[in-house]
Length: 174
Image 1 (tube, helix red, strand yellow):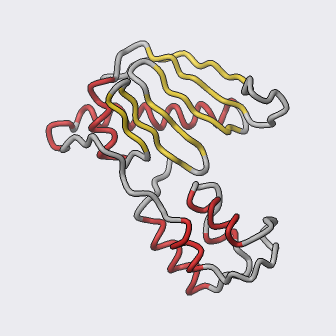
Image 2 (tube, helix red, strand yellow):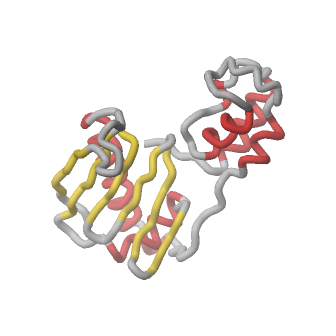
Protein backbone atom coordinates (compact mmCIF):
# COMPACT_ATOMS: atom_id res chain seq x y z
CA UNK A 1 0.00 0.00 0.00
CA UNK A 2 1.49 3.28 -1.13
CA UNK A 3 -0.96 5.78 0.34
CA UNK A 4 -1.87 5.05 3.94
CA UNK A 5 -3.10 8.30 5.40
CA UNK A 6 -3.98 11.91 4.80
CA UNK A 7 -5.52 14.91 6.53
CA UNK A 8 -8.43 16.82 5.01
CA UNK A 9 -8.77 20.56 4.69
CA UNK A 10 -12.25 21.76 3.67
CA UNK A 11 -12.72 25.39 2.63
CA UNK A 12 -14.77 27.80 0.54
CA UNK A 13 -12.96 29.31 -2.43
CA UNK A 14 -11.20 32.58 -1.65
CA UNK A 15 -12.01 33.99 -5.08
CA UNK A 16 -15.72 34.10 -4.20
CA UNK A 17 -16.80 33.43 -0.64
CA UNK A 18 -20.44 33.45 -1.81
CA UNK A 19 -19.99 30.10 -3.60
CA UNK A 20 -22.22 27.43 -2.16
CA UNK A 21 -19.77 24.65 -3.00
CA UNK A 22 -16.72 23.64 -1.00
CA UNK A 23 -13.20 22.65 -1.97
CA UNK A 24 -11.01 20.06 -0.32
CA UNK A 25 -7.30 19.37 -0.03
CA UNK A 26 -6.17 16.01 1.20
CA UNK A 27 -2.63 16.48 2.49
CA UNK A 28 -0.90 13.13 1.93
CA UNK A 29 1.41 11.57 4.48
CA UNK A 30 3.17 9.65 1.69
CA UNK A 31 4.65 10.88 -1.60
CA UNK A 32 2.64 9.40 -4.51
CA UNK A 33 4.60 10.96 -7.40
CA UNK A 34 5.74 7.59 -8.79
CA UNK A 35 2.16 6.33 -9.22
CA UNK A 36 0.89 9.33 -11.22
CA UNK A 37 1.63 7.92 -14.72
CA UNK A 38 0.02 4.59 -13.75
CA UNK A 39 -3.01 6.35 -12.30
CA UNK A 40 -3.21 8.40 -15.49
CA UNK A 41 -3.38 5.14 -17.48
CA UNK A 42 -5.98 3.43 -15.31
CA UNK A 43 -8.30 6.43 -14.90
CA UNK A 44 -7.65 8.28 -18.13
CA UNK A 45 -6.48 11.65 -16.86
CA UNK A 46 -7.98 14.81 -18.32
CA UNK A 47 -4.64 16.60 -17.87
CA UNK A 48 -1.18 15.27 -17.05
CA UNK A 49 1.88 17.40 -16.29
CA UNK A 50 5.39 16.22 -15.57
CA UNK A 51 6.82 19.44 -14.17
CA UNK A 52 5.41 19.94 -11.63
CA UNK A 53 3.97 16.41 -11.59
CA UNK A 54 0.19 16.07 -11.38
CA UNK A 55 -2.76 14.33 -13.00
CA UNK A 56 -6.27 15.78 -13.18
CA UNK A 57 -9.54 13.93 -13.68
CA UNK A 58 -13.03 15.25 -14.38
CA UNK A 59 -15.50 13.17 -12.40
CA UNK A 60 -19.21 14.02 -12.19
CA UNK A 61 -18.56 17.73 -12.75
CA UNK A 62 -15.69 17.90 -10.29
CA UNK A 63 -12.00 18.34 -10.90
CA UNK A 64 -9.81 15.98 -8.92
CA UNK A 65 -6.08 16.72 -9.13
CA UNK A 66 -3.48 14.42 -7.62
CA UNK A 67 -0.11 15.98 -6.78
CA UNK A 68 2.78 14.09 -5.13
CA UNK A 69 1.73 15.19 -1.61
CA UNK A 70 -1.80 16.57 -2.09
CA UNK A 71 -5.15 15.78 -3.68
CA UNK A 72 -7.39 18.73 -4.60
CA UNK A 73 -11.14 18.42 -5.26
CA UNK A 74 -13.52 21.25 -6.23
CA UNK A 75 -17.29 21.85 -6.31
CA UNK A 76 -18.25 19.69 -3.33
CA UNK A 77 -21.65 19.68 -1.59
CA UNK A 78 -20.30 18.82 1.84
CA UNK A 79 -17.57 17.10 3.81
CA UNK A 80 -19.17 13.67 3.34
CA UNK A 81 -18.84 14.00 -0.43
CA UNK A 82 -15.21 15.09 0.00
CA UNK A 83 -14.48 11.99 2.09
CA UNK A 84 -16.17 9.73 -0.46
CA UNK A 85 -14.09 11.12 -3.34
CA UNK A 86 -10.80 11.16 -1.41
CA UNK A 87 -11.32 7.56 -0.27
CA UNK A 88 -12.13 6.56 -3.87
CA UNK A 89 -8.96 8.16 -5.24
CA UNK A 90 -6.93 6.65 -2.38
CA UNK A 91 -8.18 3.17 -3.41
CA UNK A 92 -7.38 3.93 -7.05
CA UNK A 93 -3.86 5.12 -6.14
CA UNK A 94 -3.16 1.98 -4.12
CA UNK A 95 -4.63 -0.33 -6.75
CA UNK A 96 -2.60 1.31 -9.54
CA UNK A 97 0.52 1.05 -7.41
CA UNK A 98 -0.06 -2.62 -6.59
CA UNK A 99 -0.67 -3.43 -10.28
CA UNK A 100 2.00 -1.16 -11.77
CA UNK A 101 3.90 -4.15 -13.21
CA UNK A 102 0.91 -4.86 -15.46
CA UNK A 103 0.14 -1.21 -16.36
CA UNK A 104 1.87 0.76 -19.08
CA UNK A 105 2.43 4.24 -17.62
CA UNK A 106 0.96 7.15 -19.58
CA UNK A 107 2.48 10.61 -19.67
CA UNK A 108 -0.25 12.20 -21.82
CA UNK A 109 -3.86 13.18 -21.20
CA UNK A 110 -6.73 10.92 -22.22
CA UNK A 111 -9.32 11.97 -24.77
CA UNK A 112 -12.28 13.94 -23.43
CA UNK A 113 -15.89 14.18 -24.62
CA UNK A 114 -16.40 16.74 -27.36
CA UNK A 115 -19.15 19.31 -26.79
CA UNK A 116 -20.15 19.35 -30.46
CA UNK A 117 -20.36 15.55 -30.62
CA UNK A 118 -22.70 15.66 -27.62
CA UNK A 119 -24.71 18.50 -29.16
CA UNK A 120 -25.23 16.44 -32.35
CA UNK A 121 -26.99 13.79 -30.26
CA UNK A 122 -29.35 16.25 -28.52
CA UNK A 123 -32.73 17.39 -29.89
CA UNK A 124 -31.41 20.98 -30.27
CA UNK A 125 -34.78 22.49 -29.39
CA UNK A 126 -33.50 24.81 -26.65
CA UNK A 127 -36.67 23.86 -24.75
CA UNK A 128 -35.21 24.80 -21.33
CA UNK A 129 -36.93 21.78 -19.73
CA UNK A 130 -33.57 20.76 -18.25
CA UNK A 131 -33.32 24.15 -16.53
CA UNK A 132 -30.61 25.50 -18.85
CA UNK A 133 -30.92 28.23 -21.47
CA UNK A 134 -29.75 26.21 -24.49
CA UNK A 135 -28.81 22.73 -25.64
CA UNK A 136 -25.25 24.06 -26.10
CA UNK A 137 -25.02 24.89 -22.41
CA UNK A 138 -26.44 21.45 -21.60
CA UNK A 139 -23.89 19.77 -23.92
CA UNK A 140 -21.06 21.68 -22.21
CA UNK A 141 -22.20 20.49 -18.80
CA UNK A 142 -22.47 16.91 -20.07
CA UNK A 143 -18.89 17.12 -21.42
CA UNK A 144 -17.74 18.36 -18.02
CA UNK A 145 -19.51 15.49 -16.27
CA UNK A 146 -22.04 17.65 -14.43
CA UNK A 147 -25.04 16.32 -16.40
CA UNK A 148 -25.92 13.07 -18.11
CA UNK A 149 -28.26 11.77 -20.83
CA UNK A 150 -31.02 11.25 -18.26
CA UNK A 151 -31.06 15.00 -17.53
CA UNK A 152 -32.51 15.91 -20.95
CA UNK A 153 -36.31 15.47 -20.79
CA UNK A 154 -36.64 15.91 -24.58
CA UNK A 155 -34.12 13.19 -25.45
CA UNK A 156 -35.84 9.98 -26.61
CA UNK A 157 -34.65 6.60 -25.28
CA UNK A 158 -32.64 5.76 -28.43
CA UNK A 159 -30.88 9.11 -28.19
CA UNK A 160 -30.24 8.59 -24.48
CA UNK A 161 -28.67 5.20 -25.22
CA UNK A 162 -26.50 6.65 -28.01
CA UNK A 163 -25.28 9.48 -25.76
CA UNK A 164 -24.68 7.09 -22.84
CA UNK A 165 -22.59 4.82 -25.10
CA UNK A 166 -20.55 7.78 -26.32
CA UNK A 167 -19.93 9.01 -22.77
CA UNK A 168 -19.05 5.54 -21.45
CA UNK A 169 -15.66 5.87 -23.17
CA UNK A 170 -14.81 8.79 -20.91
CA UNK A 171 -16.47 8.17 -17.53
CA UNK A 172 -15.76 6.26 -14.36
CA UNK A 173 -17.48 6.19 -10.97
CA UNK A 174 -16.25 6.67 -7.44
